[in-house]
Image: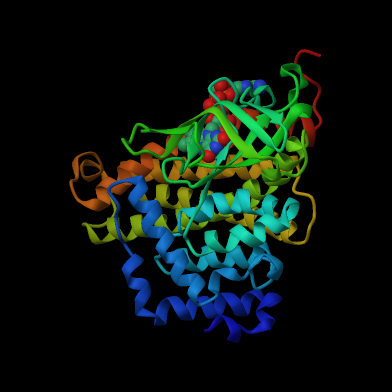
Length: 391
Ligand SMILES: Cc1cc2nc3c(=O)[nH]c(=O)nc-3n(C[C@H](O)[C@H](O)[C@H](O)COP(=O)(O)OP(=O)(O)OC[C@H]3O[C@@H](n4cnc5c(N)ncnc54)[C@H](O)[C@@H]3O)c2cc1C
């Protein structure tokens, strides 16, 4: 398909678009270069999978799901969901830059379409990707207490402070950061969302290795970093609204994307166990339980993506999706640990290495993007409307 020849009906016919993707991934041998490849570092994985974005973009494939005004070919979140699903079903990786694209590019398109038209195509081509700078050493679950400060000085903001746990922070070229522009007591009313270039003077990045030894996240320091005021996303002191808009994409699309990848890994695990001497005792039931976790997540997530694409509110009930995702991630990786046995612990091939790295990463599933405890409290307070425990 050339971009000019992309059938316009695909904008509304997601099934036809998905079918075309299925044929593409099975017929085009160029995709084999991204299948089953193991990367020794996170930095290598992000850069290598970004080249898959470039290949998809050249054919116009990953431009569906984004408005034409910002370089897309029309359609909505269901097109992007179909792309992640078909990539995974075809044994291909979902490119790492898509994770943060799902959370950050959507508010960019909504609040700053001019910036999006300039920058989104580069992201879709895999030429750049961004980090999300919300959490700080003393502000995670209680995000409204964050302290990284931005002072307005003429046409610029001057940013000072730090951010922690930034995914893809070691390789990101820009960072969308939530910073304090009001008084320390202003909580969520005194926050602004701002886009900062990583090569700005005064900005430094320190990659943080997780238990796996991989630099999955980074700490970022801002020492009087000057940022033009036209890089504000939304309005001055309006950052909380932007963050809440962003959150619905994180809940809907990140969960869907992660569920697609987890299902592919589940099938890989099943195939590996079956070809290596069959199933150990109890494995059938465990596989069935894990599969149930995964399809429960997918069913729930599909409905949330549908609501998102229909512009229906994705409200506090999406905390269910987040909890199901954490449950499925842990279930899958504990199953891999148990079924692969000694191979998981001491295997020296790429497959064992990848399962071990992923097992370590899955330990963060109950905290990253909002902890399970906090999600249950949101459900109790805002969905079930239960009385406060100390009331
Ligand atoms: C792998 C990974 C990637 C991440 N990527 C990013 C990123 O790209 N960008 C970004 O901004 N952040 C990122 N984060 C940070 C993540 O969002 C925070 O870790 C999370 O919000 C929790 O904050 P915290 O770590 O400060 O823990 P805390 O908020 O200190 O929580 C510690 C514990 O206390 C519990 N707790 C806290 N408050 C309550 C409460 N009110 N009721 C009940 N229990 C409570 C929590 O459930 C948790 O068990 C990432 C984290 C990880 C682990």
